[in-house]
Image (cartoon, rainbow, N blue to C red):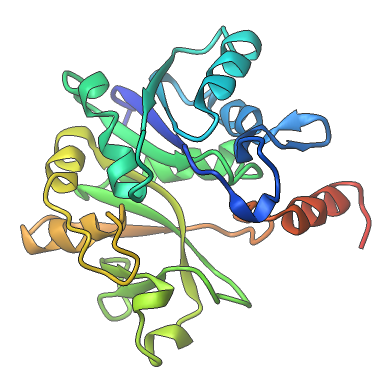
Length: 252
């Protein structure tokens, strides 16, 4: 099946307090290239007609940097002035994509090592199935801090994603985690985002809540399993950034 129209939303509004820096998290560098540029490099050959960057903390610096260094890409920028969660951030792209009819990748500017191969697999898994939503997952040795994947038995059907702070003791034992990126049909994505609430321990609008919403409406949600634990690492601290640098350099 050939791919239909494709677009992407990159969430890049966070402050990244654990980076211990006033610099926007996505402007920190790995091997001389910013996290957000690395994320965009991965998208270059995926046939995207629009790439919407959600900016917030130091947003103008992010915009200036990308307009200078990635001017060849079909970038649009939307502001998340109040940082109220990933669902709230994603919804900011609705006006830009209101007339878009195709598959939308939602990904993150601070997961810089994702490969083109993995995101291609995610798009294709979504486009070649009846699913309304496809989430990238991974089995990891240390799942602490990540949202856990609740499958429908032994199938690839995804029932819900439970955030660490909202998970039961039993759910925290699950080793399959939500990597973050997902692919969804544009119309269904924004309809679901408009139904999420902030009734959780963080008081935020979780992007992952759209899984339960889509399931409640009888839609199919599914997983696409990543096969490389290194590439799914997020950068939330200087220590994590330095660890990726060392691994790329072949160190220990």
